[in-house]
Length: 183
Image (cartoon, rainbow, N blue to C red; front, top):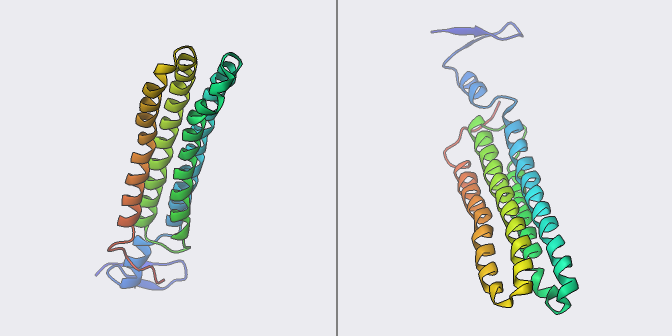
């Protein structure tokens, strides 16, 4: 049986439950969960802000030509802001499970969940901004293009929704069959 000496001078057997718990529940595991929580909100807000800013330029430019369509064209900016809500939901779920001592497996899954929703939200926000910019300008000149723009915006928005779904699946899995961190 192998033994390892801890800084206090005590010897602990490698197959001792305290040693197994120490390996599976290191002090830095909650760092990964916190980074996942941060990534979820930071990246989705970046995507939402880009989508809103990019499409808002077209909304106001087109509002000069057709002021009657101003409110109708704000759909792009609203859809971009929904992405930030996706990140907020994931961050709140992750932060609810953060503890000082937690299994490394759970921390990694929380990190992956945050990155999943964050990067998907950022990609969707970039997509919504570009589609919104071109779509609003085009539908101002030809109103029949508005339905096509909305359909394409939905395709862009669903990219963020995919990230939320994967994130929730990972967070659900992070609570199943994990080591109890008792020491």
